[in-house]
Image (cartoon, rainbow, N blue to C red; front, side):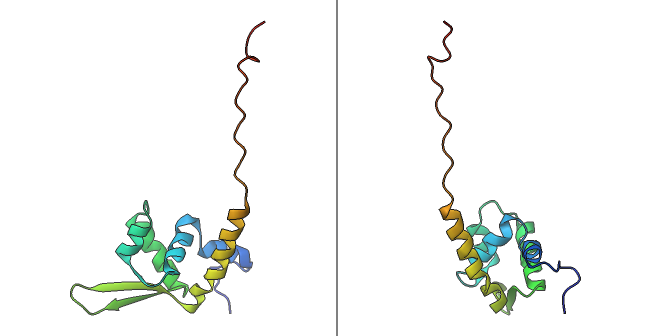
Length: 119
């Protein structure tokens, strides 16, 4: 049984669930183990609290992340990947391997000052 909110195509489904660069980077951090909200925010410079909260909630809704609230003072909440989320490890490793194989672009050649001289 499929979720009517998600596309049928596997690639489109993946892109819907992990849309934008922050989603993949959040998963990358959670692959290292459970994190508190502030630890994730500190590990991802530039992410807004709103974006981080939104992505974590989306992941929780789709069974990628578990949110555990501990009855402590002060309150403590941790996020960790579910087995489904852990399944992204091979995907991210493959993405990293592929990206490392892409060569850096060749720099633009320096203009020849003599070719710009007027004869």
